[in-house]
Image (cartoon, rainbow, N blue to C red; front, side, top):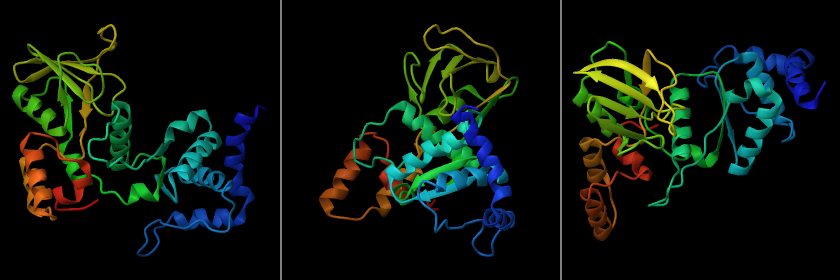
Length: 288
């Protein structure tokens, strides 16, 4: 048997061969008082921890959030988990990276798409192992309630409202362009809306008849040809601070510092720029 194929088999056999691990799994099936399902993994070598985590995930089948000290450890753990779980389960491993909070930092659409997809999976409690360095946990994220309430779900034959849909896309942080070429963009022509949702592998062509959704068709970026039909499509936020006047006002009202810093902030936002995500803690009334 090839080594890559042997690893998942060993993971599946581990709980039965290890009494301490079997006892831990039984404890984790019932929430611990005041601590939920949290536990600390001690007295194991660093190389063994991904193997044990893979066994836990394989048995519990739930969402496991793993906190590790550094980004390097997180990336190694992610790679090892992918190996131990095998190709079929590789998609159930995710890495929550710390944001680059340097003002003006450039983030690729693929990185942003991966982050927002992970946040959507976390909200949906998708069974998976999420690995995060401490640096990522120190950063605020969009509150779950805000994320879920802001998301759009378009369905065929339902009334979505043409103008309302465009307004909501803008509020979610999507950029209007002449031709959609990457995630996070949308294009308008006639009664047709092309949008590339943050969580999608392909853009979607939405045909409206008035305010009603007439059809939903994914299409290829290069050829622009449709690849099938959908009954519905979900569009999640693209930015973690939504384009909402209330959130901008919150940032301005709560920001503190030297007068020249506050003045620069007001000028920056007055120019129509999106609120930088390092200010997430100021934008929302609830923190996450």
